[in-house]
Length: 193
Image (cartoon, rainbow, N blue to C red; front, top):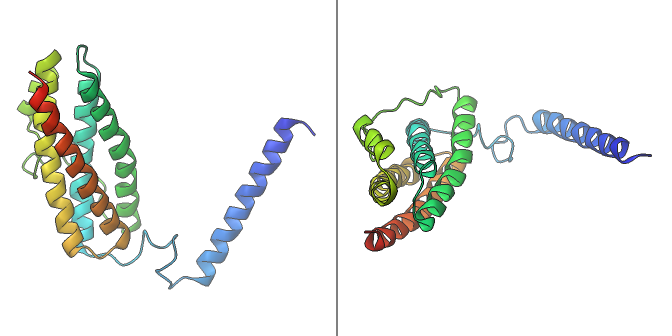
């Protein structure tokens, strides 16, 4: 049997096994909210929904800010690495937040509410877009520090009042990761002139 046929048969068998497992899971645990597949739709409260709906545009803007910086020349390598890390962490979290909101039957439209904690205004975003070199790196670090502080505050609120275990777990990860990144940004700001 040739390699392509072997891969195709293996993939088909895997898909079939997953489909059967999903059917068995759905029929045997319709009321069981402890299973992994039903945890996304597990019990949730208004705080979980608010967290996901607020963090979605917040993360979207952080990715946009990172993309702006990464498109520029003359940026310090450590700042580039940080922007790449932020984008790599937050892009999949955007997908997860969207998946939860859909499973919960909630609105997934990411409204850029600039009054939300840590959100940059249009003029802030324009300033970053128009900055170059060291000025752009410094502005990115200052803005992203404020942005992360807002995200940490929102995540803390979720940890304290959320009901969905997966959403609380994500909030905990956000607090940890973004607090570390705030420390890194403060260190970088101290050396970027």
